[in-house]
Image 1 (cartoon, rainbow, N blue to C red):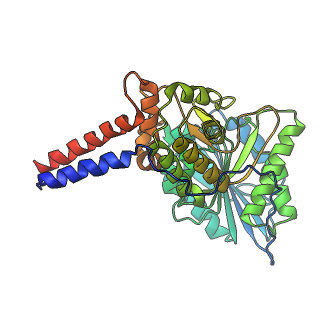
Image 2: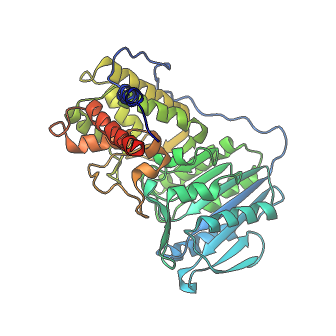
Length: 417
């Protein structure tokens, strides 16, 4: 295929203009205003039923902990309104797994060698649970080590890790209302955006989760006592029970977020708008990053803290500050509930990857950051590369974006040969 010179010129103009430069911006959404109003959700007018699916990866260092959690779950009787199903794998049994229905003695299904990192295995568990115990609402909880956008569910028998694209594959089309993680660092923009079309609600921690994970007996007992809850209402119950439990143990820096996945596209659009407005103040941005880091995982910032520092600073242009306000508004819109114990000052609900090392931006399966839906649809990776290079190597983000556009154009020119 050959392209005319005029057509190629139009491509250059289009790409350059879409890198942005900052002029003439007006806020497209209302200014962000923090609120402390208690969250209240309506109660369903009629009885509803729930199926709870707990996917516990014991094919690794958490095997003994999954036994403890299994004992917690065994103490809970399933009812006509709430059915609790568990798949537990065990490293000591060569990776074999069993499925349980709490209130029923013993396993109701024995599985052979099970790769807990396989999206097909997770999808099969979801489908099996829904077929056996159909309900009005479904919640999936994954008990595993987590690594944010880099992946989760490391299986030491198969040697595999589930990446976020595979998690999306497992959940897509299965009608799960809530996906939740008893895993570290999963309440991120990247993970939430990847799953935005697969589930309605995501519940997880921004940072580390204690090895004991969720107190299943307390959280699910609340559902058994009152199954007449919407997914949003049960999400609040989960958050309250989790934070109260760890506050009672005097544990600091524990948090839990409930994210509305249907609002993630709006949030990512606003992040892109912010980048288009060329936040060209590398040294100040680095300071903002340092003041936004999470307590444990230093590769992630709290998104709200970071953008609030920019919006309230006098060192950025009005366009940059206004677009940061837009991001804050979108964050508020996407966060249903957030609670934390004492100690953590920066955590506000949703994390974002902001590592100073951009030479190895790949997940546990060696997939690039740009292979994520967020990485593909947002210019955040280019922003991180620009920040790691510093102003000395790249005049500003606008020029850096233009260079990426030229790489794209080079590919177009090859097609025209």
